[in-house]
Length: 370
Image 1 (tube, rainbow, N blue to C red):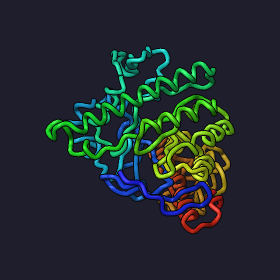
Image 2 (image 1 turned 90 degrees about the vertical axis):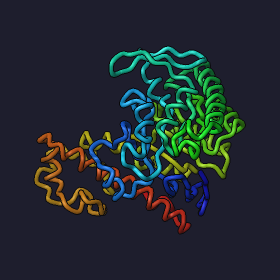
Image 3 (image 1 turned 30 degrees about the vertical axis):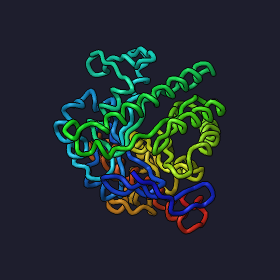
Image 4 (image 1 turned 60 degrees about the vertical axis):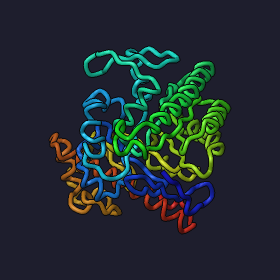
């Protein structure tokens, strides 16, 4: 992977990630395809929307259909018929969200599947092996996600665990990359491993975690453990503490954020990559993002509204369907409703980032993208 910064405006950067499956213009929002699918949206529609890179979930794909099966099928790109870049998370966040079904030790995490209750054990090495089988362009070191709220001792413990696991993840990743060709998928020699910063909501611990992760050395760096219930002001405080300590010439990825306003704000702070389930999850519940604010399409006021969802949006949904029709689909429980809603929300997010990149390159107020 190669990362080039092409323009800057204050702390914001417009750049380009060059991966084996194509180039990604940054700052970028990555739609979440948890099970190798963005719910209700076919791949060709994602391409039409301008989706540059997708995120898939290691934990869920490990459980079903299974890492070995995906390896035999040629990896995730071939399996899901997606020729553009992919990023997989480490599975850490999902494993740690199973608070009643897991047991953590320095060696790794023992957990029970949410599908059938079967027992599994994830270590940093196991996470890397699974992600190598999936074959994504960018993969993540195994980390321990700190819950919120967490006291300082708990955040310190999580920081230390994440640092040790980052070293093990990198060591195992590099040892596997040097293996013989017949041991690997075609993509495995070209994968890139990112490290993850943790430390809870304590600015000094975040700074320490950032410094230690940089000392280990990765081609890119993520900040995890955010948007876990903390106030937005605290999120910004944590980012302000950690971002300046990450190398300026490496991509910076903030995991699991946020609203359209938040992703613009974080990009203006110097973040290059973001992902979140919010646009797709909100769409399935009838909450739509527009240039005029949020629209709860289930509300009765839209029952006779013949206007487009967002007059400023050029997506296929806004070009063709009225608010009245979208409300009818949703209140009738039609399967088309979550699909159309998701297409619009993704279009809004992707257009927001496209406008932001344009603003940075022109050197004009990037706030206009909001």
